[in-house]
Image: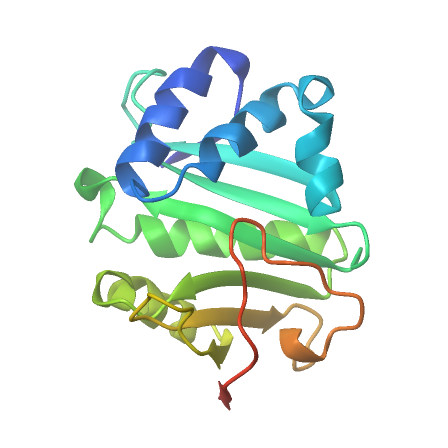
Amino acid sequence: MKLQMLQAESLYATQQVAAELFPWEHEHQLALSAVVDPLAHPDFYQERKLASVRCWTVQADRAPAEDIGGLAMLYGYRAQPDELWLAWFGLMPRLRGLGAGRELLDWVVDMARREGRRTLRLWTTDEAEYAAALRLYARCGFRTESHPALPGEEWRTLVLSLGLDGRLPVPWSQVAHRGELCGRELPVLHEAAA
């Protein structure tokens, strides 16, 4: 597996992969453009109170450069400089079941630790299609907070947190001055799970 920081020349292919992996969302399209050209998208950062947004593309070892097989985005909020959030983490079906997801997640965790971050977080839902990803996150030590479904939805929002400094992470629901989840409205905390 090869990882590469998102470049302008692979933006379109990466946007296509993101649209295929996350067809019900559209914010990733703007986020990817903001990674490549932050000066052209200052509102994306300002409205979400973000300090940084980065993306890495995934390719199979012998794949051509334009053959993007997945992506992982990291963003940080200005109010929580010791945290990073993992977003739009996904692999195309041809790379699944080969250990690439674990390899990619391990790489993200190691990078966040090298940067001196204390916590890595992500949000997802409890829909069946995310069951394999949720098992991966649990095996890697992420702790889950469950939030009730929004009106009109049948799934719960899950916020997962991983302590990177040897300590349990502060639950996201207890973080002072936390902003909205990037790309998601969050209901009131419903329950916490270990």
